Length: 154
Figure (tube, rainbow, N blue to C red):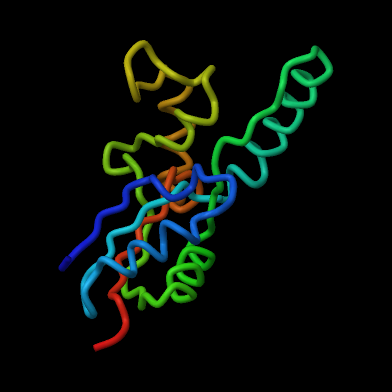
């Protein structure tokens, strides 16, 4: 294959993405392109989202609810290291979100009280939070990391 597109499909495996990465490397011809996105472990999630989720999961556990694995989240540097470890040469890494509309899938996904009526819509406070944070930098709240890499080898 000349290209493989993996948009948000490597992170939900609790055992990690090694097997899927090896298969991608196997089917892609040398020099082929790998378009890869995964959820981003952005600054807002690290400082706000993850601590709030930990409290919520603790509360659910105290009320007898089971806790299940959802997904891995990666920093841009972790994505590049993971791709390089599996034989790919990343050449473009950027944020992956709805920020061109001053929206944020990251905020929408992580903070249900800021969601609007429809899919991926945000209510007025949600739009305000997303607009302010995206105005500072889309890296702060972006839902994902997009990396384009080439398969190494001849």
